[in-house]
Length: 257
Image (cartoon, rainbow, N blue to C red; front, side, top):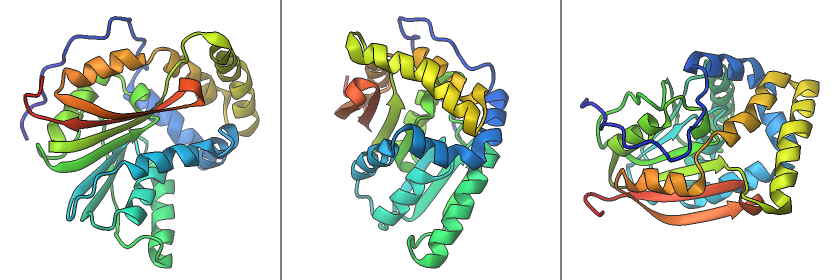
């Protein structure tokens, strides 16, 4: 496996990184048992709708390979396996083994009940060091996970490396809305309401971490620039919650810029 491309220039706004991958993994291991319940509750089940939009953008690739990074409890990869049975391989990868254990349990149930036809592969690995060959994937997705990566530029390099030319990268992520009353409501909910609910049903630390990770993430324009620097052409952008959640589809094109 060849080495990843050299990192491109950092975004113009300094970004606060998570302390370490091990601290992020440990935090998600601790909340894994309540993660699905809290996701549905805190988003009023909007997370299900957002992920469905992502699934609709997966390209048709007979005998293809689908990689879901930061797969968590497997919502995206399970939906992909149900909707795109033409793919040969479905790989879910995460640094949290606790989260993937819940995903594997859901996958076994769905496989036995006939909801999905493919056995899924689960891999403990970082988005900064994807243990797959160059140009081996037809589609890579990451949902609400890129902001948790310590060195995000390295992850984007890896996505470019493992995708085939013409392959598709799908990013679903939270962003801070820029200005207006929705921005103020978003900040209030994320910084005050969400940690209280998290403390009641899970642990305060994890749901206090969420607004901090969003605040230190790329702006939409910075993410576009980072993707362009890696020969990605963005062909779809969808906004939800007045821009607080965004879905981006980018195709890897050789020497297009």
